[in-house]
Amino acid sequence: MTEETRETPGTGPVVAGLLLAAGGGRRLGGRPKALLRHRGRPLVEHAVAVLRAGGCERVHVVLGAAAERVRAEAELPGCVLVDNPDWAEGMGSSLRVGLDSLRAAAVPVDAALVSLVDQPGIGAAAVARVRGAYGGREALAAASYDGKRGHPVLFGAEHWAGIAAGAVGDRGARDYLAAHRDAITLVDCSDVAEPYDIDTEADLAHLE
Image (cartoon, rainbow, N blue to C red; front, top):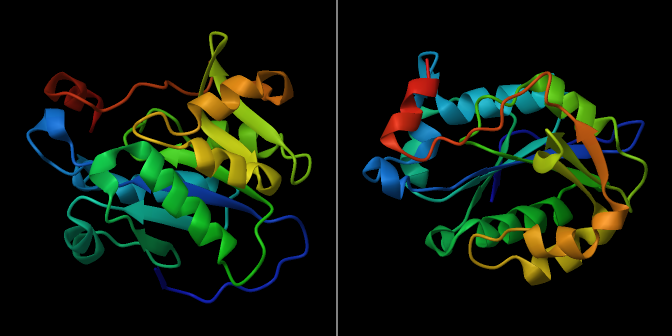
C-alpha cells in the first residue's frame, strides 16, 4: 500500500471512497478496465473524481491488472493505492484488500463508500445521495435503480469484518447484504445515474 498524501484528522465522521479498479477486462481482450479511455483520460481518474465530487475526501483505490501501468499512466494524487495480487480471483478479493487498507488508515474511517471503476454512468450526484445516508458506523446503504440495489454502496465500519468474511469470487458483499437486507437503506438514484457496466466491446460505446 502506498499513501500519496498523509491523512489528517477531520472534524466529523470519515466516509472514505473505496474504488475497486483491479479488473483485467477479460471480455475486452484483456484490456485493464482502469486504463480504458474516457473523456481523454484513464477511466480510473474519472471514477476517483466522481467520488471526490460526491463528498469523499479520502479515496482508496484497489489496483490489480497492470497495476504498475496504472500507477505510471493515471494521475491519482492524494489517493491511497492498494495492490491486490489476487485480483484474478474476482471482486471479493479486491473488496477484502480495500477494507483492510481502510482499517489501517492513519485516521480512523467510519464508513466505506464502495464504487466500481467500470460504471461511468454513476456520477457525483449518486455518490452524494448514498453518502448522505450515513447514520453511524452500523450504517448500510445502497443506491437503487428502479427498485433494484446497485452501486455505490455504503458500509459502516461495524460491518466490515462480516463483509470480508463472505467476500469470495465475484460475489463481493452480495451474500452479506442479502442476509442483512432489512438493515439496508435504499437510496433511489434512478433519476441521476445509469448503472451500466463496461464489460464487453459493445459497452465501450458508453465511453467518450
